[in-house]
Structure formats: C-alpha cells, structure tokens
Image 1 (cartoon, helix red, strand yellow):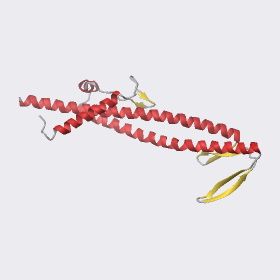
Image 2 (image 1 turned 120 degrees about the horizontal axis):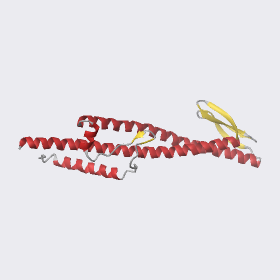
Image 3 (image 1 turned 90 degrees about the vertical axis):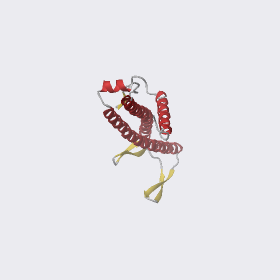
Image 4 (image 1 turned 180 degrees about the vertical axis):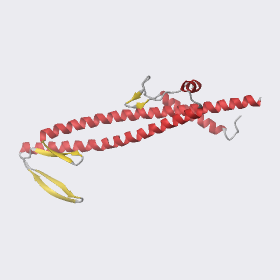
Length: 209
C-alpha cells in the first residue's frame, strides 16, 4: 500500500511512462532494422521477465547495460550534431562562392570590370578592380589553395554543394533514428525498473500474509 504522499508521484511516473510509450509507438524506426550507419537499434521490451531470461541478466545488470547504451547514444548524438552544425555553416559559404564565380563570369561576358573590397587583415580592407579574369583560387582546406578556371570552379562548387546537402539530409535522418532509439531505451529502463519494484512488492506481500 502506497503512502498518501507517494501516490501522486507514482501516478506522475505512470503518466510519464505512458507518454514515452506513446512516443515509441509513433517512432518512425522500421520493424526489423538492426542498425543505421553503425548505430545499433534498440528493441522495445514488452515482456521484461522474458527479456531478462533471454539476455541472462539480473535487473541490476540489465539496468546498467541499458544506461550505458543510453549514454552511448547521447555521445553519438553530440558528434552528429557537431557535424550538422559544420555542414549548416559550410553550405552558405559554398553558395556565396558560386555567386562570386557567377558574378565574375557575368562581368567578363559584358566586358566590364568587377570592383570588390577584400580584407587585408582584421578590420582593414582594400578595393580591387578585377578585369577579364579566367580563373579563381579556391581554398580546399588544410591551408591548401588551388587555382581553377571559372568553369572548373563552378562545376567543383556545385558538386560540393550537392554533396553537402545530401550529407546534411543523411545526418538529419540519422539524428531522428538516434532519438527514436534513445526514447525506446528510456522506456525499456522504466519498464525494467517498474517490473522490479512490482516483483519486490509482490514478494513482500507474500511474506506479510
């Protein structure tokens, strides 16, 4: 029998568990998927007793395993979020480079010079007049810069933009999959814990009768 001041907490925990279970039911993880790009899928546990028996674990070992898996999911999520931020910053830079190359080609076609301000050092700018240019220099990373014709630069930048957008779409899907697995794992932890509490209370009730 629960004490009066404990009942509201128990009710809140049950409601929270029901909310998590509803989220699991709405999760988009396809049935039978073992992993996604190296991220292992979490199995929703309906029968806790059968789960513990098949896994050969006691309650404490099962909870420790699930908590460790949940932490692993969170670490992977942090890494994926960092990659997502890098791509979200990279895509606008590539689009700006494409605009610049297009502006250079347009000015050349019209036979006009392009007036541009460029940064010499922090807060110090100079004005340049670019006439009849056929090439541009692109940073490739790791302090490497190469000169390309405008057409080559345009093709390379478009390819890099397509790759960056495709990578971002994959990352978004990975993050959604990962969050689904975290939700399922949290529900499983709650189910195992609640099952253990129920078992302890049942044993205690048998002893008292």
